[in-house]
Length: 373
Image (cartoon, rainbow, N blue to C red; front, side, top):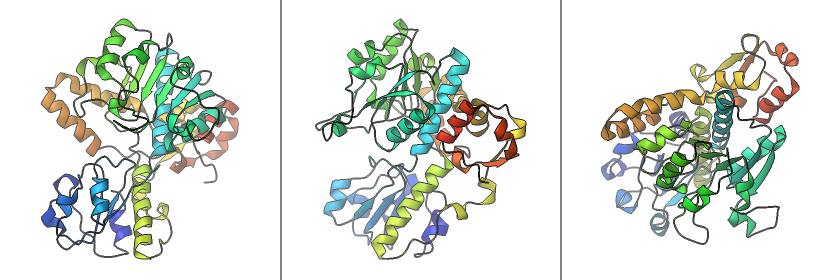
């Protein structure tokens, strides 16, 4: 959890522990517990401890027993949207790679976005700023207002479909196997399907079987049923396969830390001073020299974040046993490389920017590139 120690030490004594190893005995004199998704937090973990605040520096809360913790009087907060920009950059980097490999004209395509939360809304904004046509599908939001939504059937008209929904197994709008066998068979010829949401949003065995019959389809999967051991046959058939790292930018993690720090300050009646950018250590800064790359958005993104590196690392596990594959999958996430978001990249030789084609500048500006540096 980057910057946790310098931030929370403003408010009290900080003890750092490995997330998977936290036990009840570690919490006997702890007032607040800050975690990420590998730490399962329930009433048993907190029994007879002074913990009254739990913060997870993640969007998801699947690892928290929310109802039971609330009933026990524990304040629980998360960090919605903290890695939304990272996921958007993952999607765009993937499409740039597919453009180079398979000639997919993603800027001229009709996009379908399923799930218009923090990630989906941000992706929609980027695509519309570039000039793409976007179809938006979000049944819960559509039930609240008529804002030009389309349903899951209409989203099949899109050339590229990107999934960004939470995993809900029940309720009015379940998303488990939202992309089921019947729906998948109706993907249009040469369609692109991206899942950077949760693995079980897509029926993986059904997708695997479909791809054996539909080589025209292009699939990008960052999340998998059966994690940390994805289906071997499905991994071999998709064009881009990554180990659940779409949101793993350094900025996304730091923003998650900052959000729960702000909420803990509010819980204590304290003031959250300053911001997180000034606390980033020098060795975490990254820069791009515009004089040394081609004047196009794909070259810039390859210098900043090339999704192909993550694809190569995960595919290297195919020769391993399933047990080793699972361990490596987790290690790829745990030891993930430093990755900064476009808006945090330092630019050098900025005067070269004036010579870039307008359409290339528009892509990077839509992604948040800041020139006043």
